Image (cartoon, rainbow, N blue to C red):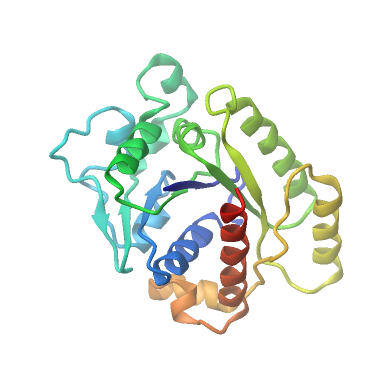
Length: 255
């Protein structure tokens, strides 16, 4: 089982969209996927039509989950389940880790139990746009990290700072691997191409060759509560998400 965290401290770069469509593509290939919504905005939970007023990731982080708790929910996607989030995650900043209110290894321990039961092939964690307790716990549990980002001056610095923070987390999770940076909302104009070129030349990490092209299908699929690959399978975003997943899986198979 592979645990994949989708991380960027900047909002609006496509983390949730990447989590949804990566899960949908893996599920098409008969992989069993568990989504974990670690964002207090709970957009992933809403999209997956999960119940957010029952047991959520907050309860897991606070150690309130017992054996008979119904934490994992089904989704509209075959082979895909979810652990939902709630707005209560907003109160869990890094101080809750230091005080012991939140267990930094809660997601890791939960995933290790899933491994023992051979329940899933992939766990995909949609992280918040902040270095919160939930984000730290996700990185602690992750085998791989994918960093979705748009291109631009602020985005470049943001990715550099995030890489430093991930490197700092290696004291807790020495095996965490940054699988790569995924450029999203790409379009064929001079600014985007220059930005992508800068990323490839100056960032000390893999930049996925396959970038996610800007497409109306992404916004339309969100309104329709479907994955982009099912709502608009021939749009540029759907096509490039499939190529990205192929590229990511090739890296996994070569480990």
